Length: 574
Image (tube, rainbow, N blue to C red; front, side, top):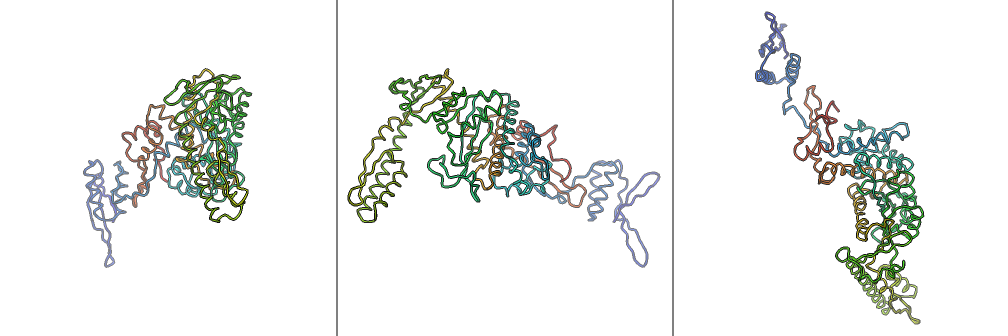
């Protein structure tokens, strides 16, 4: 069947004709009279369209629709029977991170300092990895598949066939400190400029990350776990630098057996040499892991501003003689008393916490009881003849004391005859309990009152939250890559992912929103894109977004996800 026009007195009429042959003859049968097709009302036009479709010839229907468009009628909407929903992709969270990266000019920053050569652009690959770390943290193998299913190819104009596992590993190889340190300092400067604030403090803290699979033994070392004791797995240590609003200044990667105190000089030198004067002069706030007396003296010699929680006790620093009994100190909050003294340009604030003192004392007493019970069990084993030598006895005694941390508090003496032993307390426990509730702070900010010093230090929860975010939300560990370069690249990607996430949080705060970035991303998950395919037509693929209203529409405005009502990736085909 086919369409055929007929002109009568200058007017064109249309028919649907069918050809048939027989007895060496050719006939044309009129199957449908359509009449004139110009100037039709929409209802009449749709009635004729249904008549053509009722003939059951899809090619005829397409030809009829094309004729109507040629005559100036609107393009017909495909029937639901002719439409397939090919794929639904997440859209909102991914676009949010891309928009934040565009505002920071992230891709341009990385590309300006990237080696030229084959493969996909380094800036786009790095951004894709950072978005992946935020939304679907996992292995690099999963990243390749995730990218293909994500809307990032629409935003980044980076074809999925270029994002391979080999290209991903090459990207990590390029993300090394000699390049990334300058990127981090420039990104931090841009964050402050965009959100209009100055650096008022720098919190410094570290976390350990276990390495799994084939280990990178250059960085992966056995060391102390942050939860206490020695880690059973090889690990690396990552130090993070965060300001008062949670923005990341930078990070450093150290072998897993590095002591925190030995890293402070490296970090402080970087702050002085690679950032502007406002950062160089901002006070450093560190915990007891960094604050050895030697580090405090070095900070003083460099005339740095700082507030540190010291490892040393007030008795060892001879502070109690000047401060007097803690029972007489003023209370800065319920159960916490504080006093201060100035020495050599520093203000030392000593606090006593009743709850901490009781909790620490009870904890040590409980461990002491468990150690004595274990030693009693060993004594019975000796009496029953299950211990065969003094060396075996001594090994078991040492293991018990180390397990419960009682080597300083219990003294075990072996009997002159046989394998027996006696246990006595050293007296160190009583002196330790006398210091159990003290905490000493040292600061150059001498104008701060005792309560203000403690409050200023307690604001370190920003960096604690930052590290928890990188560990849980961004899946910082464990690390499965093996080369040192790839380990460092892996950590940089997650640090960059955190910076983008925190920029989103700052944007919400700037707009007066009370929701967190995690809540905003959860709401934005409702913004999805569906790809519709019209069967057998020239329409091809049509991308449609889910409805944007209510909270979702508001977040679209907050993060500027559309421009003049247009969303990226919704024009053209795949």
